Amino acid sequence: MTVSGTFRVRKALILGERPERVFIDFDLARLNNLGVSASDIFQAIESHNSLMPAGRLETQGPGVYLRLDSDLSDLDQLASVPLRIGDRLIQLADVATVRQGYEDPPGYLVRSRGEDALLIGIVMEEGVNGLDLGDRLQGFIAAERERLPLGMSLDILTNQAEAISGAVNLFQVKFFAAIAVVVAVSMLAIGVKAGLIVGIAVPLTLGITFMVMLLMNINLDRVTLGALILALGLLVDDAIIAVEMMLVKMEAGWDRVRAAAHAWNVTAAPMLYGTLVTVAGFIPVGFAMSAVGEYTGNIFWVLGIALVVSWLVAVVFVPYLG
Image (cartoon, rainbow, N blue to C red; front, side, top):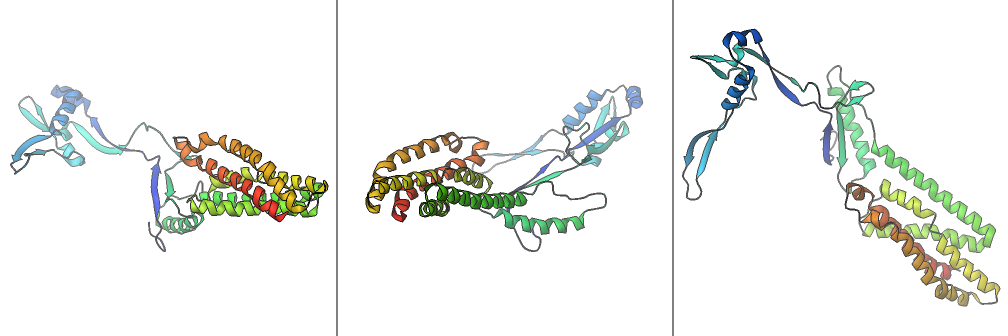
């Protein structure tokens, strides 16, 4: 496909196309006069369309056999198929009308807005930016609309570029809302400084998660965005536990360095076990050998990365910041 530049897609599927068929309409009165049945005619056509031996080529290796077949895909050739009626030889066109059409009745139909339609599905290549592909497809569709004959139209039913853009915007809204809520609640519950530390843990965790996803060649798509949205509610749990442990020990008279070390020694292992148990709940999704698993498998990997990174931030960066 080339329109104002070149863009590559993995495959393009045409759905709802009615297969073409060849129809033979018999003149029943003439068949009765000749004493021929429709089955005799079909048998003659099948015999005429069979592969016939035409010789053999001798080579230094295996022998090569030649077979000749008559191409009956052309309507004129099909109409000229000879039929032997007693001592006479007639053509198929003498007793029938040969015409080309579509499967009737159709095996299935696709309708859009009450009218018959064909669907064209575009699947982009792996690693391609869906938003960029959507912009280039808009130019291709505009050019193709100008070439369509009268009575035909080209409309977009679903545009994944719009869905991707909506998912990205939704993630951004939830991301900033999560940070605002976490910081506000933490400030009210445990103080301003501790609340800021918990709030910093969220973007820090996501930043490291994005770096790991890049190293693992995991794209940012609707599935991974959904996994990150699920993880947002869990990213601050470990950080809140670590900060609260520090506050408790500082109120007991410990200095900040000793309280931070105690938060690591006491909470690191239990939080890690809890994180791994949560991640383990998504193992069936990550290793499902099915079409669903192919599309949703990254939920397990992204959630696992985000939650493990959140644990690392909670036991390393949060005590240091504290």
